[in-house]
Amino acid sequence: RHIDMSSYPTLKQNEDANNYHVVTWPTFGGSDAAVTFNQTYDINPEIGELMRNQDFRIALSYAIDREAIKELAFLGLGEARQPVPAPNHPYYPGDEYAHMYTEFDPDTANEMLDSIGLTERDEEGFRTLPSGERLEIEMSVVPAFGNWPDVAQIIAQQWGDVGIRTRVEIRERSLHFQMRPANELMTELWNNDTTGFPFSGQPQMDPRSTTATTFAPLIRKWYETDGAEGVEPPAEIAEIVDIIDEAKISGRARQIELAQELFKKWAEEVYQIGTVGLTPMVQGVLVVNDNLYNVPATAGNDWPLRTP
Image (tube, rainbow, N blue to C red; front, side, top):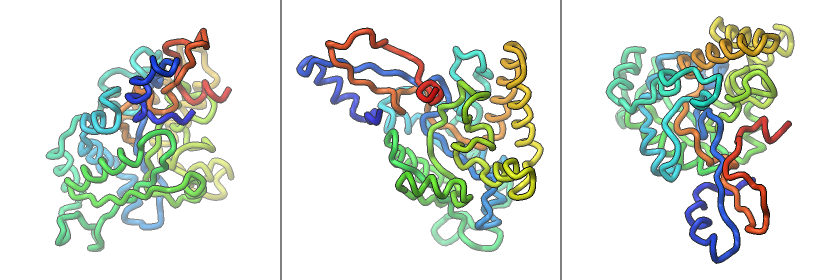
C-alpha cells in the first residue's frame, strides 16, 4: 500500500533478478499533491481573510512551477492540473478548467498580490499584513503516501519568490488529523483522489465530509448542528452543497451536468490548488510476483474504489 513512487526506478531495475514485475495504476483524476486553504481559519483574522480571498488563492496558484515539481518529485510523470476528474471521465469539465491558473506566471502572481493590498514588505523582502506583521503561511504536511514534504518545500520556496513566507510543518498523521476538525490548520498538502466520485462516500469537495481535508471545518460543524454552532457557508460554498445534494437524487444525464458544473466551480474558486495529477504516486506502484497471474497492467486508482 505504501510503496513510495521514488522507489520505482530501483524496483524496475531489479525486476528480472528477483522474479517480480512492477505495474503502475495512475489516479482517475484530481491532484496527487494539492494545497487546501482553510475557509474557516480564524486563529489570525487577517490571514483568515486572505484564506477566503479568491484572488489571493489564484495568485499563489500562478506562483507554482508545476513542471519543476513534476520533474523533481514525480519522476517526470503526470501533468500539471487542478483537482478535477481525468479527461476520459464523464465528469471532466474540460481542458480550460483542468488547467485553469496552472501556468507558471510569477509576474501575474505579484500583480495580483499587490492588487489586494499586499504591497508592503519587511527587511527580508516578505510581504506584510495590514497590521505590519509579516504574512506567514503555514502548510501542514504528512509524509504518508509520497514525497509530499519535498513538494511542500518546493512550493514554499516558489511562494517565497513572490514575497509570501511559507513555513512547512511536517506532522505525524494522527496529530494532523486531530488538528483538521479543530480548525487549527491554515493550509495543508494532501492528495485529492475523490474527484471521480463526488456524489458518494466522503468527497473532498463537500464541506460536510468527515474525512475531508481542511477545506472548511467550521462549516461542517454548522451543517452537523443545523446552524447552532460553526460558521454559515458563504453563497459560493452553499452552491457546491446544493449541487451535490441535487446530484444524489438525479438521473445519470443530469448528474453529469451537475458534476461538470461542480468541478468548474471548484477550479474557478481554487479552494484547493492542484499541482500534478494522473500519476501513480498515491498507492499506485505495485510489485507483483511473477507467479501471480491476472493482475491488470492498469486499473482504477481512486480512494472510493479501495474502500467500498
